[in-house]
Length: 130
Image (cartoon, rainbow, N blue to C red; front, side, top):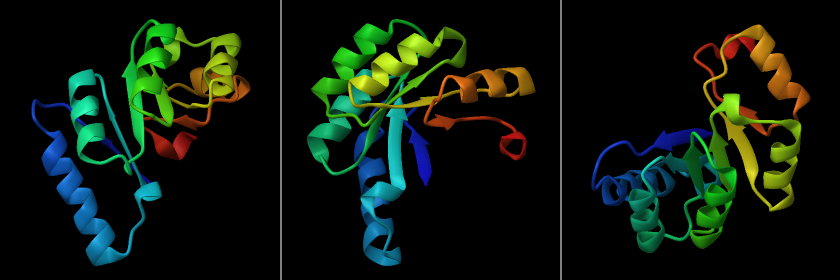
């Protein structure tokens, strides 16, 4: 699957066009994608254009705010900084119906801890270590 992070302003429309192109030309499925961003306004814009594309809310702090926002755009995942996670708040986000895809987990000790917390996915600069 492909995680696309929206980093720039006004990137939602082009991203939807790109994803639609892959679905039409290469027989991909919307489930093959997740679009994430720290920029809530970009996620809102994308959600208004297409309700079919799975969304993830990137966060560095305040899981409760992220869950509230994620619900408002029907996001499927929360993407928190791994340093803010505990076993309890991972369970809380999952109990609310969200996958927890944490970033950027690079050390063996942190990877082991995230595995112990039962996160749904680990984003790493070194996927071969996972």
